[in-house]
Amino acid sequence: MAKIQLNLLLPFIEEAFKMGKDFQIPITGTSMLPLLVQGRDFVKIVKCERKLEIGDIPLYRRDDGHFVLHRVVKIEEDGTYTMCGDNQIILEKGITDKNIIGIVKTLIIDGKEIDVDTDSDYIKYKNKYVKNIKTRYPKRRIISLIRK
Figure 1 (cartoon, rainbow, N blue to C red):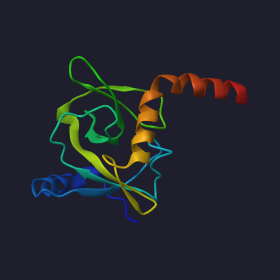
Figure 2 (figure 1 turned 120 degrees about the vertical axis):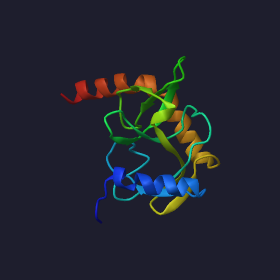
Figure 3 (figure 1 turned 180 degrees about the vertical axis):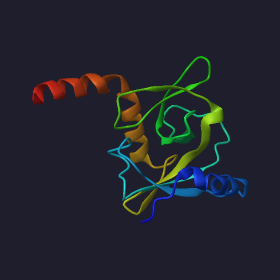
Figure 4 (figure 1 turned 90 degrees about the vertical axis):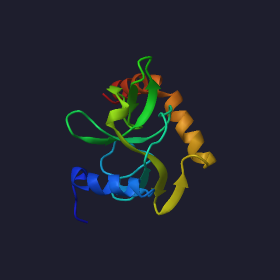
């Protein structure tokens, strides 16, 4: 499959949103493992017409131009968002509404469509990952020390 840079698709994504449609993108990278797997899974992004909530997965653009699909793990007092991939331990702070391009509405995992707002198994998974964000680093550190 040919790889197309997301910044080249941005005008098409924005046009789809203007028409009230979603936009499907493939997963790249490993930051959202074990939920989303590169080369297998996709997400459907819709225009975000509300404030993000903890557990949401927005597509956002960092100030350096990179596009990222990570989960909201905290909303700061100043209204900015703290993000983290499900397979990561480093928190990314300072994401604002102006960085947000859209929000994941549907996961396509191994060909199966999962609505992130209604699928009970997904909601349990999401709550587990958000709840365990503070213990992720210590668990990984202990595991790495044991392996040495």
